[in-house]
Length: 166
Image (cartoon, rainbow, N blue to C red; front, top):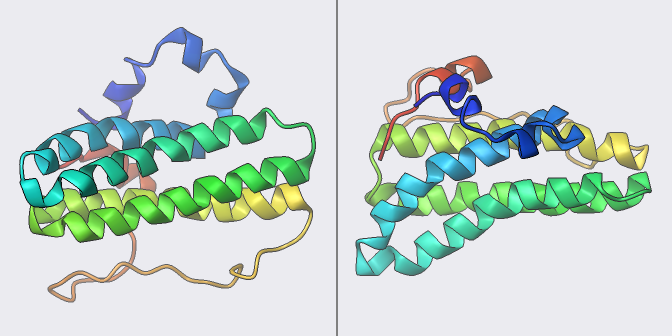
């Protein structure tokens, strides 16, 4: 299933909410859904049962915090919850890195790249709500592959079209 196919499965109760207009939220829900297969695989190995729980909690927390943030009145309150979402996105990316020994390389790399895209969006959303900038505004993200391929991050359209499974 790719992103376009997944979009068709999201119920109107979700897509009809103004929250649905936030790209980071949509991508967070998608990441959580495709993470389900990864977590299921990780749960089958005793060594990664706890990791699978942490990963799924971090994935779910991204969208949950974005939704809670949008529900806040002040920009500073919204930014605080978007920062929680940012922390969860980075945490999930770290758990995917730690899970690389059991997940297929293409799937793990894809998930880390998708999470990096969500992180980029949040790094724009947070200062917009705060009315300032983050310390990280000049950070450039690169994804290096084990074979030292081109280290640039694939565009979002590519990440949403071709979804490798673990």
